[in-house]
Image (cartoon, rainbow, N blue to C red):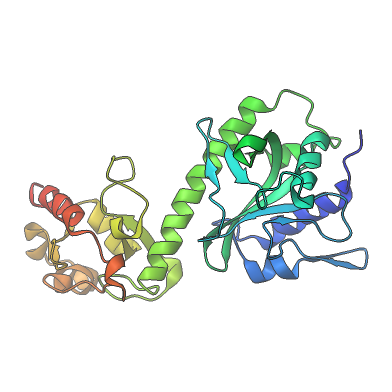
Length: 297
């Protein structure tokens, strides 16, 4: 069986491989809407609807989850994506299109909104289940390198591999979402030294993500430059529950050049640069818990 639009799909995936930021997998919605050229046709990859089929295609080419959108896409107990139908009519043309993609085993691209205008791109994904009673499709990610090296078909049982890859995608979504939301809240500044070079900033957890309280939410995060992130993680630097910076006592007594003096010692007692919205300010109970561990070092 020949997959409909297969050449267009592989062209789209090749374009994504070039267009997506290799370091973080992020692409702008404006780039997705602009799309790519294919044999004289301009093919966008998204539209205002989450399930998108370009005019030139027989089947949908992509699915999208929009940040703050109307559909509650989530991951199920098996770690696969539960993707909501368009509307509540299982027979809507978009839903029929994804149902046919399931039957035809057609690869698609998935774009998950991290913050408005920025998406994590995942490809290929496959529709692997249909739950009309829940108004959802089940979606699994697969290995693009394997798809590129196979004659339109991945011949072995892909289920264990797809479950593993989709769980890894879920982790990436959490990490990238946390990173983008925290840096956006702090307006791309280090909360301690105000450095504004985004490429040198990290989203630091107050309570580590392996802890039950280490949720990937803005109030459990701090935008820190790489120096201050490392200092915070290693207990050289602490932050009090009332948003003051503290440097470890033995470090305050050291003399070791301008980086130590200006980058750490002079930060002692300064106040954090905070988000404009108080709803995004660091959670004080989490800061207190972390600060107690800093004092115990």
